[in-house]
Amino acid sequence: MNSDYLMIEYDIWAESPSQYVVGADEVGRGSIAGPIVGASARLSYENLKHLEDVKDSKKISESKRNLIYQKINKTDIKIMYSSSSNIDIDKLGINYCNTKVLNDVVSNYFKTNTLIYVDHVQDVGAEVKALTKGEDKSIAIALASIMAKVYRDNIMIELSLKFPEYDLQNNKGYGTKKHLEAISKYGLQTFHRKTFLKKFI
Image (cartoon, one colour):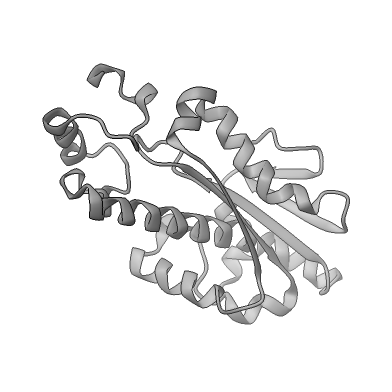
């Protein structure tokens, strides 16, 4: 295990190896299409043997993230997901949906003997501690980010089978040049966030 990604948990488990730690993160906030997805990962010291390659999801390749996702799904590590659709985002706003998906994946752990961490400042609850650059400071947050990203990527890849012209399998719903050119040519689809793309309406 790379100790660079175990700062928070290392100190906690040194005192209490049986202590559960939950990390949560969201992905897709800045996308122009598809949902925002939150995930949480509940870890104990016993789970370390499964986490050798886990670190900030932005610092590992897509293929490595997919392998970690598949591996974790075969363990007893508890992963929870929540998503808000592009329709919800257009109706309720991205900030509300961001907070909602994070609250959904950590609220079951409130009033339990569980330490809960989220990446950067979030209005989730008094029992939740926010960590700036949390993926670099907590293995639980780093794992949650990987799981959320692969979960959401799979949604966008599935959409790409029906709408190949938008290159969703590569851009995952983000506003790349190719994606924006496709919107200009083919128009907006039901999966696009209209409030993010007002100039195309």
